[in-house]
Image 1 (cartoon, rainbow, N blue to C red):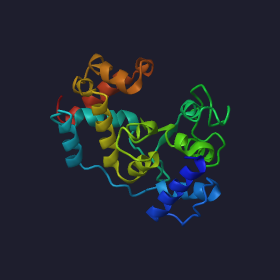
Image 2: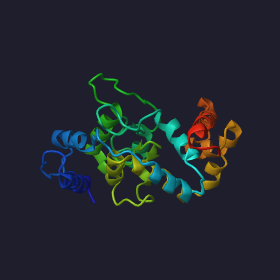
Image 3: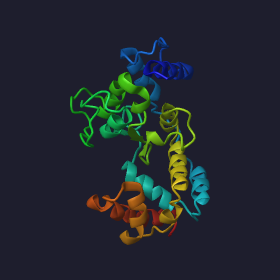
Image 4: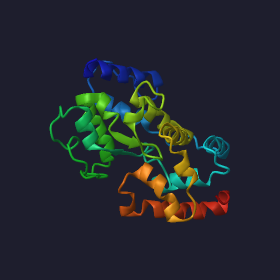
Length: 245
């Protein structure tokens, strides 16, 4: 399927949600589709995850309380998974796009064979750079674009959309934008797919106990910024609220 055909499917998806002015389904990821993207995914009244839902998901991982799951969320989000404008936080990975699109865009501000350039608003236009890169990359290869950033409070890459049960990567982003509970579902699903339940269950208030999960979730360089220490501190503070682990 060509990029134009994929863009038409995406435009049809946006129109089906009815949350932005109807756009022409012409296969051009231009100004109108870009504007509709910002409008469609911005949700200042996203549903909060309930403790009942979080408890059910925690129990599916063998947890007796919510402490470990919520500790990961706290470390990953620094408090919130949404921007002030209502858009969910995403982090563009230019090297993912370069690889998935087979370098079709060459080396640009949104495509590079090397990771980096994690800016927030370098051009000072009031728009998050990751969202701008997503829309710019969508004109070149929309399927690669929607797989080239991490999303949700747990920062899961879009290229895992099929493994997590989605037909298209923008459907995964849509769920993340609408409901905080979807964030926890993604986390639980990703842990189960990767058979990493034991690493989560091993976490307690000591940094050493969090190393296995930190390595799984944050990569082999987890210790550089003390990811395992942050997890242990979060478990310790949340144990006072949700119970000791």
